[in-house]
Image 1 (cartoon, helix red, strand yellow):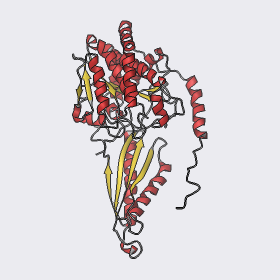
Image 2 (cartoon, rainbow, N blue to C red; image 1 turned 180 degrees about the horizontal axis):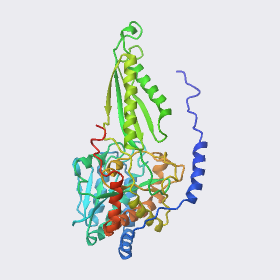
Image 3 (cartoon, rainbow, N blue to C red; image 1 turned 30 degrees about the vertical axis):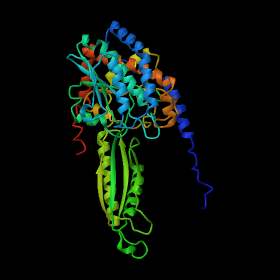
Image 4 (cartoon, one colour; image 1 turned 90 degrees about the horizontal axis):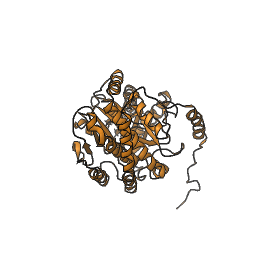
Length: 442
């Protein structure tokens, strides 16, 4: 066997990343956190919530560490959801596991009527990386936020729920639950996400999945190549067409893909080839336009090679970008400042350092926030082994407690302050109101 002497890849130069970090540091130092003109809950209620969160610290950190040590992938989070349910039952709450037809979804709610806000928990992990997106922090901060708010919700004349949403990492659990009616009586939702910075509002892109399947005509690649129609040629042309498209896209758009089928043997003209692309964009309308442009490339590649093509969209639900609710995010920011953090306003950390989340789908149905909470340094990216380590570190534990307090107090503000609540929904309506999410890409 002949071995190459150059089998290792060239490490990427990190000059650009370092320049971003340096520029961001200056902007962070000069930035002012979001504020809020609203009063929220009264001081006695806030103090009671804070005392409740402090009493929960050991339980919350213990659950976060347990989830971190036992990661489970989307729709298979059976141990994780049981552990979350056990914590809620320990503190006196009834729990339903299997909500909305998903085995690993969870719902717990306080009794009563009136305004209804839900705190969300995610607990799925990544293949090979464990909690490289920090969902153990998301889950337990959400649990603490619910427990803290639940202790006072009924006397404030409202309700709070914890909704455990499976399979955020590509599976679209929140969209599935929404279509099953789990959020039908919910007025607003709050959750957080760990990150390299504290940010009150950070954009997440909409995302669609597209599988291009090209159908050709098989033939002997040497004896009768002229009798074939090469599906791999069509797939390569499509891949190159998408590469050429990138220079003409908005700076916020992302398209990335892989070959999933390129034929079986070199001496047979491939009669089938396939690609899987993720398409991301910052607005619903621009995501729809991007989908149309990539579809045209696939059809053109098929035409030029004499092949057929199937375009298979969204094996899992499409994700919409997040629609901010500045009014609700302002209350989160106030409480995080009180906890010793500095949640940044939008535009300080480069907004292209982002991904996608199915929380976006809910944000077009009801007011929502998805603030970021720092657990790692500015060069540590999501979906890496380094971020997974941070999610189980003391900084991750601190984020669980600070995040639980912020979520609980934001939820309590929403229930307690009618003027704040009205402003939250006025902003949502001014942004376009509720969208028919399932029909948007039809």
